[in-house]
Length: 363
Ligand code: SAH
Image (tube, rainbow, N blue to C red):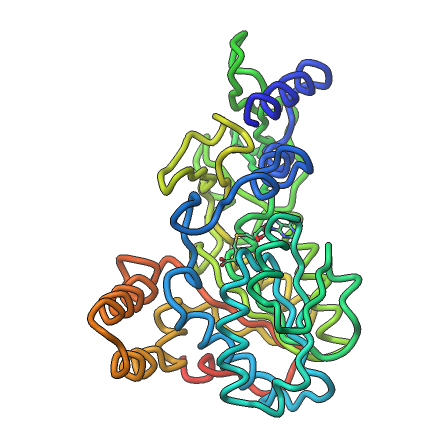
């Protein structure tokens, strides 16, 4: 597969010149023929990377309970709409639904589940996982039916394409992907013409040294704007869980992963997962500008602890055999320990107004 996407990109570059990093990333991930999410197994032990819901059932369960609390706290009514962006194998949603059905059976009766998913292959896996639930699939938010909703995005924003800019003197220039010299490989270059781009306001960007890299994610800005419009008009909340710093800062965070190891970003396009840190500062600024209530970001450790992951662990351990106990304990550690996902991953909620949501009010 890689040879075909690589040769197609080479042809395109030879014809039209270097492409932007965002165009490169988009081709690698969602090209309809060769894109990584379209052709590769991706998530899980047999894939290339593991995500929180695949580590432990506790993750999806607690998010399900968060969705119920949010629905009640915001005093929402009508069918309980749950919208998930990039649901992967459907594990988070399956665990969340099981918890919702137990904790709030009457509300669960009204559930309508909407999954925004680009990959037909992933849709197939989600369909198998969620066979007994009323699920519809969408290419984007436009076709999700109107009304209050709780939106969930775990490791979705990191897969949206980023643009990169390199500082030269006092100006920022777009970083591009072209040919590496006269070889068949791809290499980074810098557009000689300065870019007209709005970077975050933090002084770190103004004071960045020559050669510093800044990342901007137009696709994320667009989705946040769209969700905020909807939250303003129809009420609800969005939960974002992803990896990235608490505040905006310059830095090159583009990374590729293949078979659970880092992989050179420009090698084997379409065969490796490519992501970049999520800029929570930028997402939060966009939501505030749209008049939203922004809660967090806080660390995944604080979030899961606030939702009661320690108590949930004890409950599950009580009914577990030796092997299950070991899995539960290591899953809890991987999700919450500062040296694992606990501090790197952040959680932020956006709501159209109303009361603070748990556990953000206690942070
Ligand atoms: N949330 C899941 C999967 C994370 S991987 C988990 O935690 O396990 C990213 C997911 O987003 C995949 O399902 C991928 O197919 C989907 N995706 C990536 N880019 C997308 C896009 N532009 N639109 C919709 N879905 C996308």
